[in-house]
Length: 229
Image (cartoon, rainbow, N blue to C red; front, side):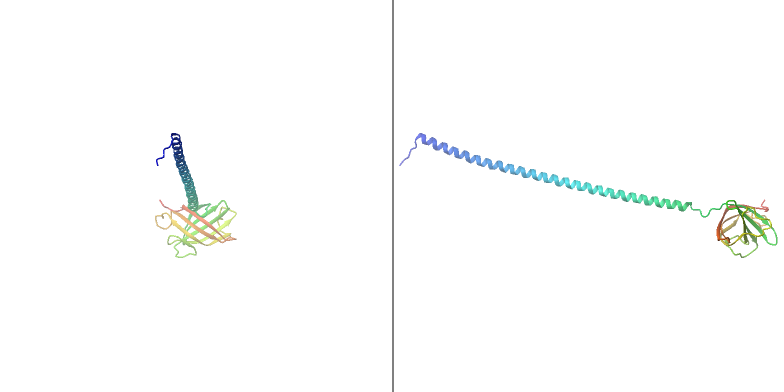
């Protein structure tokens, strides 16, 4: 049996089919839009996370660099301080020349049975006068002081309250029980007996109360009464 649709029914069916297809297309488009939106959000979130991670890493790296530089500066400052301290100590050591000698010196020969040279030290700061007598020829003495052979130290005697030693050499206020250092001669006379000049770098142990140590430092003291031409 053959069915034939009337023209009006055919139009109605065609319209319904068209409407159904349109609805189907709209649904797929919505899904695609939703997918695109979701993808864009995921990409945006990923980019934000990457940027935050990169920013945090950069900040941490910068902080680490700053800390390292600060540590290096502290170490350099410490080294500079150490160098300055060592330099100051070396300067103090180099300027330490030992005991100060405030004395003025004279020397004169005293011929006799033994040859003698009397060295006088006048200390105007302390108002003292001290004599050290060298004599020759002698092999030994009581002082641990180097003296050119055959000379030795006979005695040391001193007076307080004056810078002029008495002519009679009586009643000295103190002597010396020992000493250390060196006495040296600068040339001798034509006979090779008396020194033309004497120098010394010694310390004498005075028998004062309390005992004291006195420095005698002089490069050259001319010996009076010697013919050195």
